[in-house]
Amino acid sequence: MPVINRVAEMQDEVAEWRRHLHENPELLYDVHHTADFVADKLRSFGCDVVETGLGRTGVVGIIKGSQGEGPVVGFRADMDALPILETSGKAWASKTPGKAHSCGHDGHTAMLLGAAQYLAETRNFKGSVAVIFQPAEEGGAGALAMINDGLMEKFGIAQVYGMHNEPRLPVGSFAIRKGSTMAAADTFEITINGRGSHAAQPHLSIDPVLAASHVVVALQSVVSRETDPLKSLVVTVASIHGGEASNVIPAFVKLAGTVRTLLPETRDFAEKRLKEVAEATAIAHGASAEVIYHRGYPVTFNHDEETDFAIEIASKVAGPKAVNVGVPPHMGAEDFSYMLEKRPGAFIFIGNGDTANLHNAAYDFNDEAIPFGVSYWVTLAETAPAA
Image 1 (tube, rainbow, N blue to C red):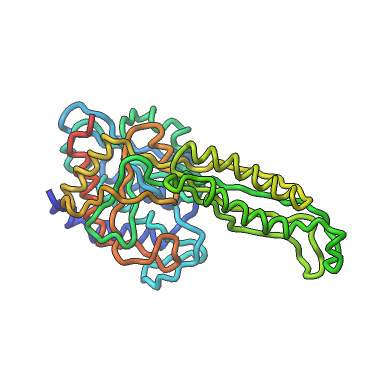
Image 2: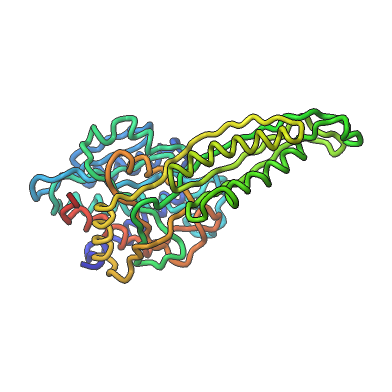
């Protein structure tokens, strides 16, 4: 079963929805226009239940099948955009300067709306489908907010599936892996406290700039010399702030960055050693270090049986040769991970073709991917889910 004929016929309509959303990007939980657009469409399709305000601004639609009893399977799309000034030059580019759909969530939302329309028309499946439209994926943990509002229990969701577009992966293809597929994302802030002085009298100071420089270098030894090379770890210091004048040694310097891991034990180790190395390095230079470590999104972990099922479905849509089942894990993070902690499921990547990278100001979702994404959701619903 390749791309469904009816779905192919829907491409232009779904693309119109996608471009409307692209023109009107919203950030984090402030996705009121997008949520209203989604809810109105779901009601017009004839969904059995349409609930808004879950996780502040999330939307859930329930579509009951006509083929008898079965589980409630959740399909999730994210709705929020990014704080980026778009440079794509498209006719449907963002109308709001400083906000842009530079990660393709407009495409994710439109494809799931297309699937909802088809499934509400045909209902050729067992059980029910819950179409989940969540806010605040881009750093706001909107998935967790919806879970905390009772998403899984309220709708009796037994399994959950997610999808994300992937630039440079050809249109009409998919990629997926079992187990850890996207990294846990933690952040840290380190304040190096020294003693300020005139820059011409460094011997009277405890120079936090020098100490901070050594901390940056020392943290990389945690990756290169203390971590098994086969157990992925990224430690990035992405921000350094200290001092305001060229002739003043400041009293303190602030560092900030991120830690990415794929295994729980590596995550625990990285948190412990980051604090130890920062504090000890600062002391070695006569300074002190205060470390704040925040655990963010967990590892996105695909469950074995559900991943096999997703592979089966993607292979039906695109053909087995167009499904990469051994794609390397991403060190980026995804808050769908919270849903996979609560229910078995799988997260799959869909080809977006030769486009700008995600989070790039020139990025635009490729509308040619729409029939494949919608067909994936529809075929998944119409095929008996894995037990």
